[in-house]
Image (cartoon, rainbow over the protein chains, first blue to last red):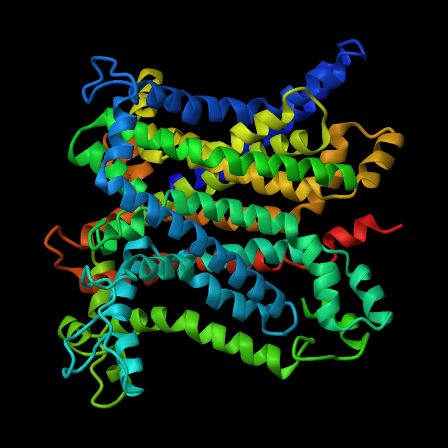
Length: 324
Length: 295
């Protein structure tokens, strides 16, 4: 119980300290000449976040970048060897192809279904229940999720009783059984894994999109309805355009999640059966083969892959500022 | 929620399947709910079945007689010696690790949204781009930092680490939300002589409540379900301080035996995140933003 008391104190004291800090910045700024205030102020507001990021993410990442140019033991610089190795390895081709599939389909699934659910639940009285049902998979641990889908995808040879939910279900329609995530020949193994992740993360898209939906000024929609707009026109003309920035946030987050896809692949197929992904390869190089140089190079490739998407985001923020 | 939407219901004709309370909306939603619930339901039912049944037959067989339900799986999970302590540890880790990043991120998001400074966009790209940094790559350097500060193996180390790992997404989400708030609100506040601190606490923060609620849900969830970060920064030195996730990981041995307990453990550890989700639901109410933008 002591711990809970301490936790309560921490929860009061730390935000208290942070609020005092921000309040204190204004007092300090008073001492500065008027001209300097707008220059100094943003950095004081950013300082706590930048400090955390510099120590816990940027500093290790610099180490990773350096390691990516070194040999496996980190004793010697090897130039671009690790990058040449990665792009030349056979696994890399599979991984890059699979990550592209992850990127496209996971993002489409999560944004599409997240938007659909968020818009639909806004129109019914059991919103809370419906949202909870969609949210539950996200609260489940990755290991439990993989067990759940083991039961879903289970495959028994044709003619025997099917114990997997999907195969039993399509069996009643006289189809299947389909060997999901069981054999190399099944070409949609990666797709089957994406479905698991999409099932988990739709709740994420839904929660964020729903939060943005609630932020739309209801008077806008009412005015359109009064003018005789149909519900579909209200959605097309008002709701959707106002949600676009949020959809970009969810898409970007899912693109990054897809690039980093690891847990589900690791627990369900361990990258076998043609399902390997970049993060899985990195994990193997790091912990199985002790190839820190190569693992670091893969991490840097991931980091580089995200840059174009971030620049797209910045362009969008500029537009947002122009219109707000 | 009902109260907020009630006046809207009377306005405008109900048109098409997409209209409020239309049968098409209900059908689509109920189909989606069933599709999303069935996989979990399978594990839930299996968690009340003996291992031989759960692995031998489909979960739906349990719904027909003869019934073979048991609470043994739950009893086994709950009988693990230190599960009570680990539950408290999980709370102790999760609550500060949720509250701290929200404040830190809100300050940064406000600066990114409403203050002008050189390099703002580049800095924002860097902050959000850090989302892609693989956690595994940070573990060893950060652990040696903690060791040199003398806080390796303490809860403080875990709070700090979770705060940092959660920040890129938190800043991204809040910056997007705060940046979409109407300019005139802040301009009129400035004209009235409000300092940025006042504008932040009186306007930006209250108007961002739905986004903050969403963020709190996710941050709590990720910290609650984390094993890796706690294991490295806490468990290497003080294994008795590990969170609930370590009990779940310990249930299944490397040979895969004990997998029948996973369902029970998953549902037990899910209870609290769902409580958080439910209790923050009420902040997803229309009008928080709309109300303050009027006029």
